[in-house]
Amino acid sequence: MSVAEKLIALDPLALRADFPILAERIHSKPLAYLDNAATAQKPQAVIDAVTEYYTHMNANVHRGVHQLSERATAAYEGAREKLARFVNAASPREVVFTRGTTEAINLVAQSFVRPKLKPGDEVLVSTMEHHSNIVPWQLVCEQTGAKLVAAPINERGELLLDEFEKLINERTRFIGIVHVSNALGTVNPVRKIIDMAHARGIAVLVDGAQAVPHARVDVQVLDADFYALSGHKMYAPTGIGALIAKAEHLEAMPPWQGGGEMIRMVRFDRSIWNDIPHKFEAGTPNIAGAAGLGAAIDYLEAVGMDRIAAYEAELLDWATRRLEQVAGLRIVGTARDKAGVISFMLDGVHPHDIGTIVDTHGVAIRTGHHCAMPVMEFFNVPATARASIAFYNTREDIERLAAALEDCRRMLA
Ligand code: 7TS
Picture (tube, rainbow, N blue to C red):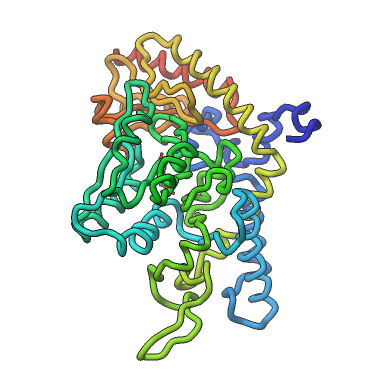
């Protein structure tokens, strides 16, 4: 962060104006959007980039010699270069575009991990994973006779690092770990986990879906073998995301899906694969989505990830203290290092009723298991209510949530 940036704190009210949807009225009330972990809203610059793409560039990529195809290819490959710089990948070749985090993890499970697994081998994850970092490993274990092992967490929702290390043994073939938990907000010490794994020659996938929107991520500093992310959680369109992977792994991996784009030569007796990353991008990709992702990255860099992290940390702290003042409210997930998320229960009120009632106040939160059922099981709750913040949220949004929760208590508790 430059000195000038440090001096000028982020101004959420000015930035809100860049997000047209934040001016929507919900049940005749202004919108307080606190469901950013599910998906973040899009700035006008991203909406414009998608419109611009369809208005002035639409064509297929990597094929035509005509002008439009060259424009589309430049937008698509330009977005790859921006994303590589944004997460400090060693090269754009290490950026494979996918539909999102889920598809990125499935790709690694089927292409990198599956060929290595034998009956009795183990894949290690944590108890706080999103289903998309559990189910792909269950599938691959079923296919090979390997076993999925989940490392425990404590009552605060923190990973027990010593226990995690004890679970790494001679049968462990791969480790998947979430960077920031979507259900609890816990920030995991992924660099330490990667060091532990690498000391034993084990590769690691980091699920970065909830990390990339909130702080600067440097995949080379982390030394992550694989890093999965979703565009729509970082202010880009839905349907675009990426797997960031070390080139040496991508080179060694077989293709996952076959089709156009991923080949150099096809004959009926054999085909030759395209270079990485194209080897993993079969079929016409989400070109407009990539153009939107490129614009989202430009936007985030203009705001500054360090400023975003500083502002959100302060707001999360303040919101935690404010919500704790609501009678009967209990926060689920009180890790010392958290980002973005406050999950909670309200005495005597079912989480689903909370969601419905606060919606009538114009406040959008998510209620349910947050695709992290093992976390719900650990805390012995059917569901939680979850407020998740972005840099365009303000203390006023939190005040409105608190007031809506007081209303829930009056009506139902
Ligand atoms: N990993 C984490 C940590 C997530 O939070 C999510 C989505 C995913 C993976 C899957 O991402 P996708 O873009 O491929 O769907 N999390 C949420 C959520 O918390 N509420 O809705 C989706």
